[in-house]
Image 1 (cartoon, rainbow, N blue to C red):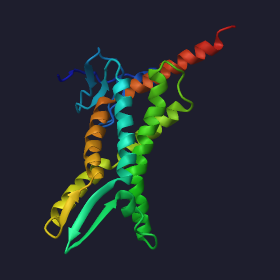
Image 2 (image 1 turned 180 degrees about the vertical axis):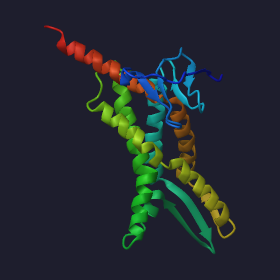
Image 3 (image 1 turned 120 degrees about the horizontal axis):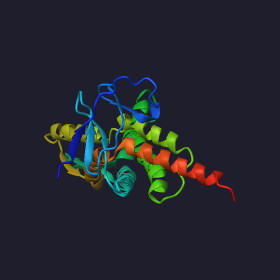
Length: 230
């Protein structure tokens, strides 16, 4: 069922307002005073309709599960055969690592490095950072060390994690090559298909503002606990 939405009122006359209580729209830069909507509802930008806050109860466990699934699929897809090509009686099976390490000299080495980074390393690093940040919060523990830096890095890496772009590009290229040779998709191809779907679901399910709030609350509790007299 689609979550109901609450349109936020534009933050006018914000002089003196605590910056921590403000939220900016990532799409149109409109600034609002953050108000947590009831569970199951979403707060959206009044100007462009971008979802700013999506309130869900116990959302951390599904995000952790999806992130762990992405991490497993990325690492497994790197080593399993991605594609088999047969033409003129000759055949070959390749994995992503085979493709990435096929150029070892010249300018094409940069292509190999970029392939590994954008398709395997960065997605794995991003979900690893999310697990590092969210897992202690869901377990009721103190925030992980440098949790803020880790989550900010995970958010910065999001535009550079191009797993779904790679999957679409491969699908287009394979359609054009199919007339020249017989192609068979390997396990890694289907892993990337599943991976692309999971990444989209995970990004739509995750509310960045809620995670920042959870870090703030956990750090506040940890500070109060540390200051209590023994």
